[in-house]
Amino acid sequence: MNLAVKKELTDQLRFGIPSEEFMKEIIEECEVKEDSNVCILSSDNGFLTYTMMNRAKSIHLFEEHESVLNQLMTKLGSKNTSYYKFDKNFTLEDNSMDFVFININEYNHDIYKECNRVLKNNGKIILFYINEKKYEDIIIGGENLTLGENSNELNTILNNMGFEKNFEKSLRTYKIHLLDDDSKVEEEHHECSCNHEEDHSCSCGGEEEEHSCSGCGHNHIPENAKQAEVEIKVIIAKK
View 1 (cartoon, rainbow, N blue to C red):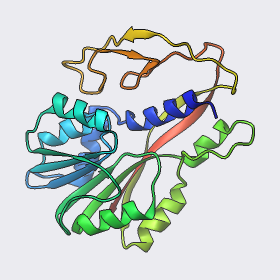
View 2: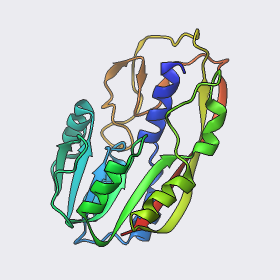
View 3: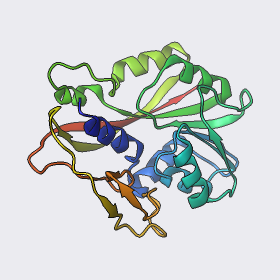
View 4: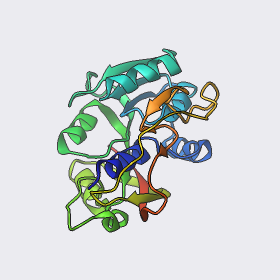
């Protein structure tokens, strides 16, 4: 698969947190309160963290990419929020979190174990993921891709670890570009057009970037590129 396609997919998931209206629905479904301790794994676009800063007691944000982590620290500040470089484990005490939000493109058992360890009894795990069934059309030349999760498998894993699912919903559907291996992505410098001081849905900071602006989705992809549909979903489960 062309690297530009995989980057677009990863960015769509990372920065695919829905609108404020839907986030409020998720927060209400989770019953996040003023005394809640919240862990967020993989930074989203800052919008989820920003929303939680005004609702929860403490936020512990883990991000595997140091450059993104530094951007968010500058962008969001330290109000009731701690920032960590993520590397396999949460540096948090056992049974200390009320909620763990996960927004990454590949899940594994170690992450579930860590969630189980840090969550209090009756704590909730919230998973954002790409629906594998909607992702099948993106396979090019029979290649087996790594992105995309099977909803039934996720539910089985959570159930086996003692989690009880109480909410599942489709967030949104994206059109993803399909590029052949020989396709070229135009390289250019550009300035993001977003109002970055007011718009918490973009992490680009309004700076000039090469190739693409992940926060705003400005990927320079040929106009004749084919497209496929990808669905992003959320699962909420209680420990």
